[in-house]
Length: 288
Ligand code: PAF
Image 1 (tube, rainbow, N blue to C red):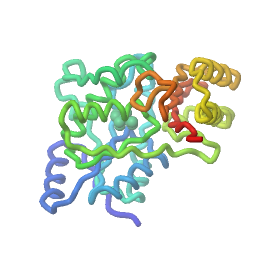
Image 2 (cartoon, rainbow, N blue to C red; image 1 turned 90 degrees about the vertical axis):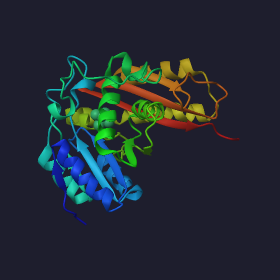
Image 3 (cartoon, rainbow, N blue to C red; image 1 turned 30 degrees about the vertical axis):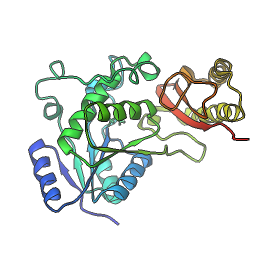
C-alpha cells in the first residue's frame, strides 16, 4: 500500500522532521543509497520496515567514493522514478542532500574516516580511497539521521565489513541489518551498474554467479586448495569474456582463508564491457 513520501533536501528540515518522529517515540531505520533504485534496494526498504516504525532512505551520489576516471559524472540520476518506487514501497522519508549540504567545507577540506585493515585489498586494489569515501559519507548520514538501525546489502560484503567496524570504533549504537543479495532468476546480483550492460552482456553476466556456485560446491565438499580454486575461477571468467579484477576466498571476517575454517566467503570483482560487477557467496563446509 502506498504511503506519502516526504522528500527533504535541507539538513535543518530533516532534523525537524526526525525530531517529530522521536517525540512520537518512533524508531527510525536508515537505508542509504546512491539512487537509480532497483528491486534490491526495495528489499532493503522492506527489511527496514520490519525493524523500525519509520523508514528514511537517502539518495546521494557521493563524489568522495569515486576514484578518478570512474563513472561519478555519468552515474544514473533518476530521482522521479526513485521517488515513485519508494512511495510504492512504503518508505516514509527521502533525504536528497546537495554536495554542499554534505560537505559544507568542500570535499578537499572534509574530515575523512579511514577504517583500517578491512578497507584494504579486494575492491581497494583498483579503487584506492573508495572505502574512506564510503566510511566518511556513511558517518555523516548516521549523524544526520541518528537511526536505530541501518540496512545494507550483502552484495557489498567488504562495504558492510567496513561499516560494522566503523560503528564499533566510533561507538555508534546503530544496529546493522545485512540484507541478502537480490538476484535475477539466472542469478545475476542486482546492481545499478547492470544498466551499463548490453542485452548480450546481460545474458553472459549471470555466469559470474555460476562461477561462484562452482567454487562454493568445491569448498563445501572439502577442497581447500584455495589458490587452485581461484586460479580456475579466473580462467573461467576470462573464457566468458569477463576481465577479472579479483577472485578471493577469505574467512568471514575477511582475514586470510584458513583451511580448517567451517565457513568462508568467496568474493569476485570483474569487468564486463562498461560494467564493473561485484558479487560474493558465503559457503559452509559440509558437516559429513
Ligand atoms: O552502497 C551504496 O550505495 C553506497 O556505497 C552508500 C552506502 C549509499 C554510500 O554512498
